[in-house]
Length: 300
Image 1: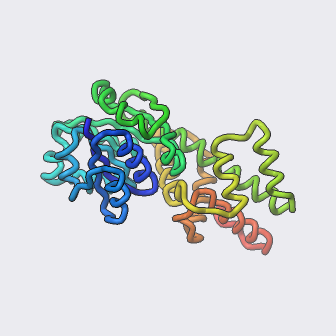
Image 2: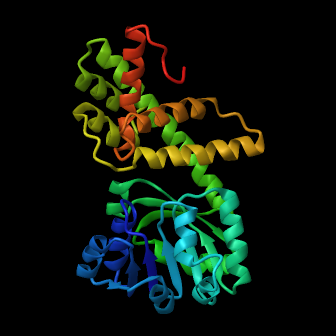
């Protein structure tokens, strides 16, 4: 089946490259011309705009920053919307609010299209390796149509039921990711400020039961102070807000997440929004320095 792919950012480009290498006819588009060249070189057809993507492909995957970006590409709220989605299956793979996804599904179906939400768990490196984990939700027939298209990008795909349960599952997974990486950064900071050999500290961590794929990816970045982006701080903060909103809406307590929310907001305020999420270390260091000089610790 021909497939369209829109959104060639940190995650989208390696995902689209995996798809282009799978032997399918892939039509791609991005607002940024420079991001299209690697896909053209990989054999994908680069469209002139979203209209061409929807004309060429019965299924269109979207890896876009947020709901506003999705609405703009789909032409939602304009006559272009129905022209694009009618007879097509629309598959947002980014992270939005569950309520947004429910509303978009209703609009797509009313316009004669199909809708599958398919958020993925993983960052740039798993995307490059085709090791993302997909969570999908939607009508059974549409999910069955979409699942084979995810195989070049995702080593596991879990069917979560009806929209928005895939996004709720993604938010639950991201809550664990955010608190885990923040805890790792804080423990690294604790060891470093006590004068410990931080490489030895990470070796001890890696040998024990707390070691994980996340710790093995992020610990070397902390050690080298390498904050080259895999999952950007500002995106983590957006995810944090989505989780917090969903928790508040359902009356669920999220005390660990709330602390992380403040720390990632601090990290953005310190100018590290485009850095990898491991750069939350900067916020921890700033708070330590504030305590050391008797300044009030920001955010508590």
